[in-house]
Length: 393
Image (cartoon, rainbow, N blue to C red; front, side, top):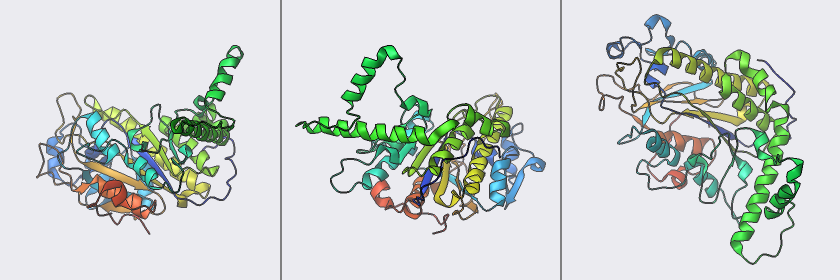
């Protein structure tokens, strides 16, 4: 594993951390976790099916895409748990709607905040009107709905440099006004309006968090991040995850990091494209786990990946697959119970031509909340979602 400048020195924090990786666009779970002993798989995909000889064998007639070597290494090392057939009732094939469902953890879309945001809201105690923004970091241009709560809003950025005021010297007056408006120096006036006081406190917290992030990121925000992983094939995902590693090593108070990787909407020409995506995804995550392990940080971190839906079982006429339903979820770390969990969907019993879900995704969330974040799942998700036995507690 290539390294650039040394990671910042840790301060000895020991809180647990969740890293959520959204695989955006609808990953083809059937060509990711391959049922190579099911005849229906090859009948439905005469061109796209992975040949049995090329599948990376796991167990019970299930294997991985041949480009998913990073996941295979983690599986063999006992650091990968695969939950098969994950979905929800009455699935929606719209990217936007299904993404909102996964983010809110509400298939009826009655809730308007995210499940991670509600987790942070539930952590609020005393008179503090909101959790610190730095407790949740989204490495996205726009704040993902999953991270937004009634009280909590995370810090969101694609590059730490974007968190600073970078106006030229001729804009010094504007920068000074910016700081005064946000009361960044912390010299709060006696403002009678509660909303104004709240906004001032929120702006101060966000600025302090931004300063910490830029300091922790050090030299890895630009060329350093690319040098660290480009040769290994991890691409942009690896760059983001390398930054997460540096922030964790700097003992940031962050409990949830949110990272996305797009490009998985493979309606046409899927074969070569999905191979490249699998290489980038699995290499990025496996290098991330390796780097955490090298820095003795892995025991504190759980990685969870998801996609808004899988693809249809039948390949289409354009050498691709269309929007489907159930798909696998992945959990990585030293505290997972490795192996396959829940049965693979039966290809002889399809739902509208799609894989029928057997495990509600909220059960996976409930597992993470209860067994990793030490929270009550029913407070965040409502009742009725039994956690899975996929983590060592």
